[in-house]
Amino acid sequence: DAGITQSPRHKVTETGTPVTLRCHQTENHRYMYWYRQDPGHGLRLIHYSYGVKDTDKGEVSDGYSVSRSKTEDFLLTLESATSSQTSVYFCAISRVQGYTEAFFGQGTRLTVV
Amino acid sequence: GESVGLHLPTLSVQEGDNSIINCAYSNSASDYFIWYKQESGKGPQFIIDIRSNMDKRQGQRVTVLLNKTVKHLSLQIAATQPGDSAVYFCAENTQGGGSQGNLIFGKGTKLSVKP
Image (cartoon, each protein chain N blue to C red):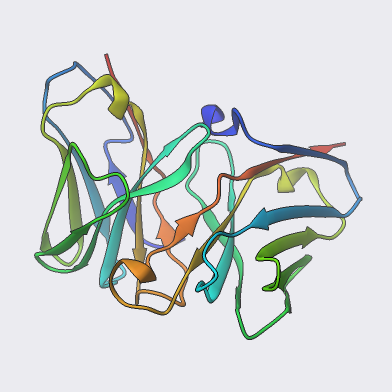
């Protein structure tokens, strides 16, 4: 398995509170991604990073921000969590962009109550 | 987890039979395709990929077929086993830079293998 660790694996938080999810990789891959997975929607891209301090929006970026200060870490922040952000969040990494597979972490189940 | 399987098309097969999972992709410019397998409570796992200059590619017990004319992708699993029970996703992207190079996922098909 690719060296990807997501933390925490499970979290319950209250509406309006800030939440940060962490993705750590040991593969030295340039590209890192955050997806959310919901029933009926499959995997949707939130944000991605193409290098340290280089990030861009994905399909469903509203309400989320990201940061990448080191190659190995990619943080996803919900500034003020809402119930619609209850989901399973996956981090993924890839060596290059396009024409290659992405490797996924084990996921973080986030519940906003 | 288990909630991933809700609202998904489901394919139920007998152990030992062959399975065919289909996917219609959306972008005619896509030139790279992947199949992922996701078991309950785990992240998606790469199975096999194919580039648009190919019609067929075989792996161990799996074959991917690509029909660019109708934008259709299929995954064939030979001699399906209980361990193949999972949700299967197709994904597409292009060689283009920027957001074009990001993978776009289909909604998935749940494969259930009966012993």
